[in-house]
Image: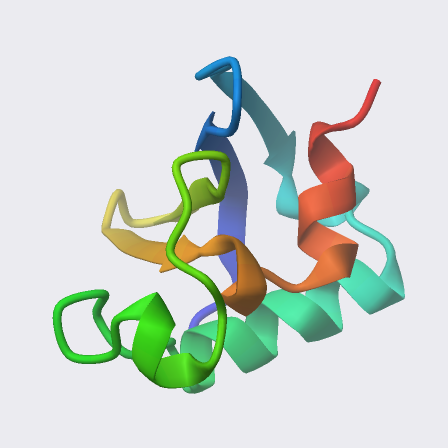
Length: 98
């Protein structure tokens, strides 16, 4: 697998419908964040249509967050994943906090 050059994370939804986003260079990520990203890229969560929250045991609610992770590689390729709050690794979600 190629090493990413940057990672952009977006969080949408929640009770107030707030939208947060952050972009980080891959080299700036810590070991736990890199490990969480590698795991997410190798084992992406099932698409929302295939695994609705109610089937996973999580309540379907308007106050839940949705995440989008966009990874850019040195050659310009991009990989994008979208997932529910329960599927987002804590180590990556914490990159949105100031």
